[in-house]
Length: 231
Image (cartoon, rainbow, N blue to C red; front, side, top):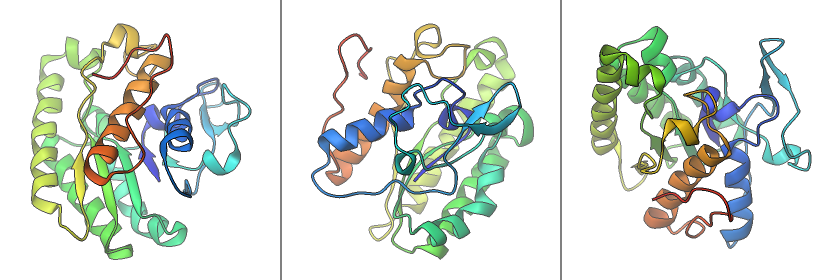
């Protein structure tokens, strides 16, 4: 199950990195799998609601569009939801990209890290053997221009790494994904924050590599010709 904010839900006309992961798993994963979650739409910027079905590839099937992501939602919002959603949809693996919106509007680094721990506890209460890959906050244009905000992002990523180290267990492993080394806002985003097609591949590749290296899921991420390869 994909869990995330605006970078994960995507907007009208996007492919999304969820789509790139679906393509990767279809090509690289030797065995059946399901993508699960309560939502399946994109954010519609005109309406300001998550009501768009206009994916860049209309052939992206509904069952693969499933997610738990929302425009403007963060750890603060997902922690109270995750237990019921995991239980209802029988998720066993979470790919999570959250935090930028928390730090930008709702909570400081320490408070956000506490919501990470709350999120993990709630997910495990619903499924004791759940596993998860957590993406660090990827700095955006605001982090580059606002030193205080950039420092909060750096501090949160330190606390996230500590939380993963503290909370991971053999029965319920947690992985800290690597921030894509090739991420440059000018190429990896279309507005300084949200992923372009290049950024979609970089995000999907970072999650895919973490799962492949740690758990043997799938294989190395195959970057299509013309896309910027994850480093």
